[in-house]
Image 1: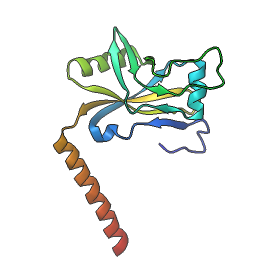
Image 2 (image 1 turned 180 degrees about the vertical axis):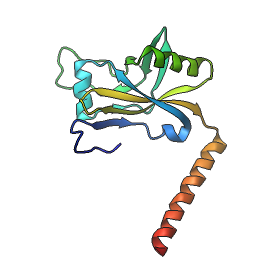
Image 3 (image 1 turned 45 degrees about the horizontal axis):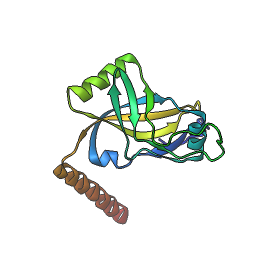
Image 4 (image 1 turned 135 degrees about the vertical axis):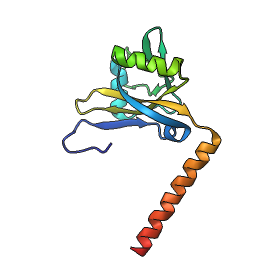
Length: 158
């Protein structure tokens, strides 16, 4: 997701790079996120982390759990809690699909990217994922190393 000249508001805030290594991502969904004013201002400054967080379907609603948004220093009266549960916004159809994936198929909802879209709205991309075993991770490492080596060889010979 590269920032283009046509999207002046697009900005990646936090990315969970480890997710693609630890999980086999089968599908991803873009969700809205309900934030307080001081949280939005803190995100504009770039203070957040979604590496240890996950999403869950609880009582018919989608929640982002354990995500960190740094406190906004200029907010005197209306400070936010840094690691509170934040409600995510999806359609009913997508919510039922997510619930089926987690409850019936044993999948995990992993946040991949937290960003501001082209309209300046905070969005989060969730991946519907299945955990990788150690041998799967070794296969991923081997393929990545081979691709790097192949690129080096092509660059040297070409």
